[in-house]
Image: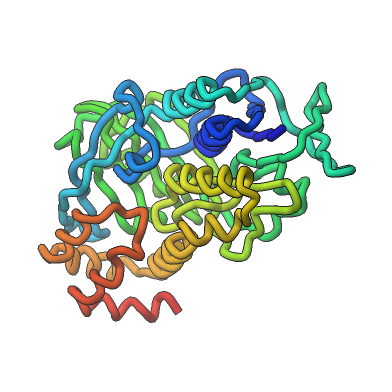
Length: 358
């Protein structure tokens, strides 16, 4: 028996992969509905197509271009391989449906409290129930109670993300995302249609002030609001202890440069299902697949964190070069290991920022 705590993308996709392989698996979700509350921008690159095909009803919009703004108001625009803007609630439910069709079970309104291991069994304590399982997976988000109960939480750092769905008359092209450098770590406007956008910021300090600046730019009227703490990847974190595993945000598997985690969570789900079924080492599998790119993303984020507004202005100027725009457009941002060196070779002036990384 395998028990997964958390019915987000990480837990649902893992349940699907395990059930496909004939495993008895149950997903426990504390809320009464899968897919609520929502706590991410809901944008994924086309790299997801190599993992799972998402039905069209889940896709709200397709993004073909990205425009980057510097603090001094200059910008450059580049074509990209089409990103998907998802209805995040529908995405979670879609993956849950696939898991159920494969044979997984789901139990809602089950708030996990802690667990204890005894005689090769794990006793899960919920608010009104105790359940015995053989394997436990924490897919329960940034403040994972499974990680805390297993003494795997350790030293973690977090950053604040704020986002609204809003009405605005400032959308120039519904197929183009705007990224604002120097607004906290960065800000964004992700169109759903001609008049609705997801506007947000990620910031370590003063997130509300930075967020309000963007709202003014877009003359935006809030439809709904959500915020959350985003974990920063920790290369030293342990994701397994005996028969307890961590995945997704619970394992800090977040791209620190963009703060997205859906794709990496699905990839880790594939690796964990293989580790459990074939009795292989989980940490070796996922680190071989995404460990280096997680580390590179962290280095990129820590470098940009030290940028001044002048540095951001220079960065936008350099990337206005057609060669660099071509590199950005021909690669998905999930795997910087595939294009970072090429970028530096084509624009040696970027090397001046190396000191920021030290």
